[in-house]
Amino acid sequence: MDHKAIASQVRGELNLRTAFDLLDRNRDGRVTANELQFMLKNLGINVRDEIIHDLIREASHSGNGLINEAEFLQWVGRIQALRDEQQQQHDDSTSNASKPVDEADDVTEDLIAAFRVFDRDGNGFITRDELQTAMEMIGEPLNEQQVEQLLAIADLDQDGRINYEEFTRLLL
Image 1 (cartoon, rainbow, N blue to C red):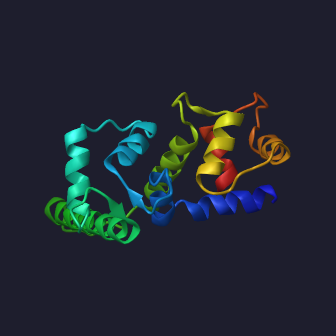
Image 2 (tube, rainbow, N blue to C red; image 1 turned 135 degrees about the vertical axis):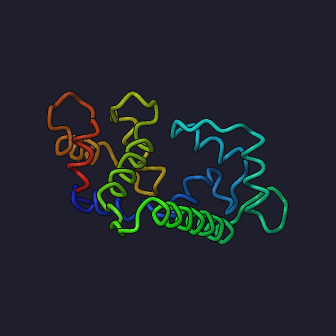
């Protein structure tokens, strides 16, 4: 697989179904409170356990403390609809002139979130090991040669790791 195919795959995989797969660490088709908490902590988001359990209970139709993929997609859809509604109310109250949504901000947020998935220790760089682990997490394991090729293409300053700027250049 060449670097463009890998970059395309990474972009394509960063969607809700992939998010569910990333959360479902044991691949049983259900997300637990522990799996959700694990992923949020990896993204640098600290949420109290009680809130995580409340979120899972809200999303789970069966009330068993587990979320299947369909429940996850519905739950995120409701959250997005509420966010959009709140944004619309805010826009209506702050200005009579309608402002277009800044798509660049959305892309930037998506890229930062993707970078955080890869930058597991949060130090601002993606190491060889982090790259390999993240690619495995999204279902695209790389062999040593592929990791070398991707690093050779992405690591513009040749320091053996990928920073945010290099990451965005690879994906855009």
